[in-house]
Length: 458
Image (cartoon, rainbow, N blue to C red):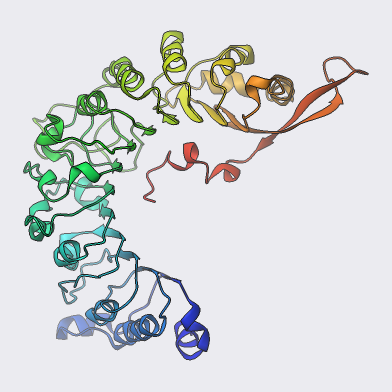
């Protein structure tokens, strides 16, 4: 009904963004599968979408996130459109569907492809990648099934096979890879001009410490740093490794670094949160202590090569930073605006010592240790109004003037403007203080240091 109304009403010409999401019920699916036919309901849906796309002359952003596949009808309708941003989610079922060689889109700038699974009749996007010459942002998310099943059925060479010629090499500035499980053929850097890359995100893909380098998006050329990344400004990932240290040591000028650390999943056979690679020698994943041993090397590389330009820094909560680690960050990163790290502060005064050296910080997170509740318990013991009192009085000083959000373990506080009010420490006297109150995490969902601390693809 919604698509029908969109097509029939004269407002369709004003639509700039169209998102089709939800569960679509296909009738007579079993019978159609036996006969090699696409259900009539799916064909009607795709026909309506194509008509809507063709009539929406101002459409710039299209998102297809249904449990049924986009058919060639819609792909053909996109060829002459003005689409600049496209998100396509492939279904996770193995119902036979026509496999389309997707044509290039002349105006496409951003492409996000979700739930790629070779066993689920995904379309061939190689021509789309090679022929869309304005493409600058690419996000590829594979089905987590392949990593869980240790199925190395993805071959990047077939996906980017049309991008080898000089006139078809990709010119990507933003690259996001998630759930990639593929043997390393050492040719990743042949498909894209690395001198243009500004942001790289790798989630559940690179093979972290203790995992095999044979299933890594960052191939051997990248590990040896034969490729220069002069424009790189942001790195985001969920694994720590020697290879990441090499990259951090051989690049300069990064502005944003988000190292999430391993996230726990329901299905895994390793203590680092992810399955081992197919090329693994069968040894168990590295212990948490082995991962912690990389902490100092990461911090040294970050502060030495990126300290003066770094604005956002997020370190894994499993790393409990020592006073020397924190001093090194403060001394070499004077332009930090948002920062998050793990540390076991016993009292608020410990953190008060940091702020004079971080005058530009507007959001700070002291992360809880996921393997120990001691720090969280200490913060909750003081959660009787003392946090608000200390934050309100301490952040009124000039060196705290830009701070707005502060997280202590799982407690989040927001500080308001400086106001003249009664001094809570000296009743009857007026003083300039900031009101502070407890806030929900929903309030900071769009603040980078919280937003980027997830396995979501943006």
